[in-house]
Amino acid sequence: MTLHRQLSAGRWQTLGLVEQLANVGSEVERTIAAFRSGRHDRFEKALDRALELFDLTASDKRWRGHRLREVLRAREEFVRLFFEAPHDPASAEGLRRYFLAFAVLQNR
Image 1 (cartoon, rainbow, N blue to C red):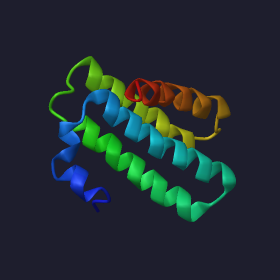
Image 2: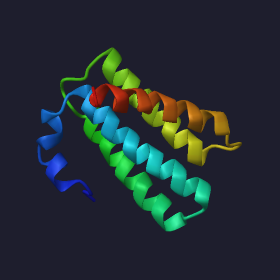
Image 3: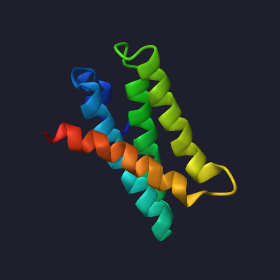
Image 4: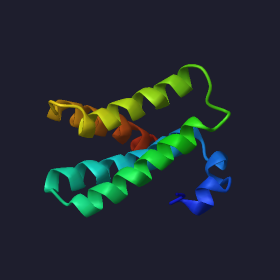
């Protein structure tokens, strides 16, 4: 299922890595917030959107080598937050700080 139709139609590849990861970070933030608040419906939707943006970023042919590994590692840590027991709250904060750096860079 495609949630970000315009982005998956090619617009995503017009964005730079910083902008892509800042957008991924927005969805990561929404997912973490929904998870913490116990809003399962919002959590599921935010999780789907975040994973789609991770996958769009990973499929961008410009990001190979260390950049692709970093994107995939961040995705792995993101998924681990919600599906691996025991849950480590510090991991969520680490991901939030990681993606915040891209949001700050994008706004400069």
